[in-house]
Structures are given as C-alpha cells and as structure tokens.
Image (cartoon, rainbow, N blue to C red):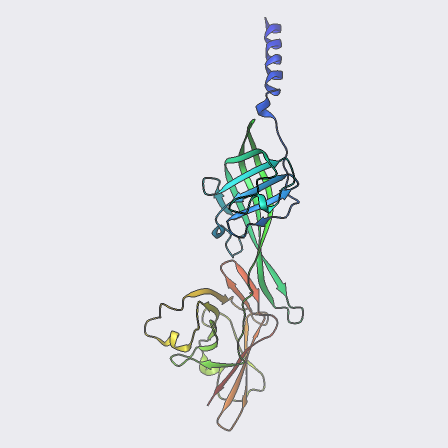
Length: 317
C-alpha cells in the first residue's frame, strides 16, 4: 500500500511540474533606456519586438530627492498601471505614444500587472563649476523597482518578488540667479534683499547694527548661518519687489513657486557670512557681502553656492 501511495505522489508531482500555467517567461529591460511620451503620462522601454511601460501620473515624480531607505511607493491599480507587450516585429514610440498608435507591427501577447508596488528612489543630477565648486540641480534620476508584482499572462499569473524596471531621468531648468551686484535694505525691516524679476535673495541677520556698522574694516566681520542669521532664495510666479514684503497683508499674487533655505553653518568651515566695509565718501559706506561655502536646501534636495559667492554690496549713510 505504501508503495502505491509513493507512486501516486510521484505521478502527481510530475504532472504539477508540467502544468502550462506554471511556465515562467523571462523578461528583462534593465539595460534599456526609459523614455516618456511627450503628450501623456506613459514611461516606456522598447527592446526589439518587446515593450514594457508604466502609466502613472507625472506628479508622482517629485522634484525632490528621497531619503535613504524611504522610496516613494504607489500601488499598482487602475491609476498606476504596468504592462508588457510582445509584437511580431520591431516596435517604437509610435506604438504607444500617439492617441491612435500605429497598427503595425501586430500585438501578439500582452501581460497586465494586477497587483504589486512601484518603488521610486529619486536622486538629484547636478552640474559642478570646477572653478568655485558651486553646484546646480539640472535634473533628477528616478530608479524604479516593482515589488511583489503579479502579471496576468494568457497562460496564467507570473509573480516577481523584485522586478527592476531601471532608471528614468528628467531635466529641470537651473535657478537663474540673475542678481545685480548692488543690494538694498528693506524699507520696513533690517532684512537685505536682492531682487531680479521673479527671484529674490534675502539675508536676515539678528545683529544688523554690528555686522553692517559704518566703520571701515581691516578684516571682514563674520557671522554663521543659523536660526537667527537666515539666508533664503525664493522664486515667484511673477515680478517681486520690496512692496510685497512690506504690505500689511501678504498679497495673493505673485505666488511662491520655490523656496530654498541655507543650512546652518559650522565655525571656520561652512555657512559663513562675511562683510567687508569701505568708504565711498566721508558719509557713505559700502558693505561687500560674501557667502563662504553656503549650501541651500529645499526638502531633501540641496546645492552649493560654492567656495566664495558674492551676495552683493550694500550702501549705507
């Protein structure tokens, strides 16, 4: 009896292994560059007669770095879709991006993801000025991985615990920083502003009277960026002036688009405000403000103003 049971078990195991629904097909797009359709939120990869694409809102790809071990996570559902297709000939963007895609080559097989998580890890792409070591953010790279994804194939489901989609890169316009050399003290406070169209650079120091004393310096006066000595860059939707900040109620327009705040300084190392004072006339003084190794940050992203950045010159009487 035991022998019969063993034979039956062996036959069942062999039959189960030969089940067509358990056939595993290998798809791999890790070496293929991801592209995005210009007129719709589709990120796709093409390899010969195969295509893998994600339909996902563009807002998912925030212009911000993710923290280590804390990727963006979205569920695969009716809004966030993952699809694999196989054709009978070489395919291109014409088979996915137009409102009415090309009819050829013919689609021979399609897998639709029915569940899983899309993980997105974001890293800033920066350009570096070799002369002053300043950096600017020019784009972001998004590393995309599918976790516990289930594809529904014509022959049945196929599950991947981890499926690497790969990198998708975007570009952003670097902040203009089109400021003039001369800066102004606010008409309603001790803040110092530099305006340039929709941009404004603001220096707000706790001890204004000492840092900008009307006395010629032999060595620069210094202060560290801190909670009381603040530096911020703001970008608005329209032209900005001192009147905006001096209004009793902050105007509703223009609207703030971006704000970058300087991170706290370290003595003799970084985040240093340096002021040198000379005379223009017997009653007029010129204060030259330089920023040494200052870094600006917005959420998790940051860039450096470099070793020595001229904030501007302030004229006082």
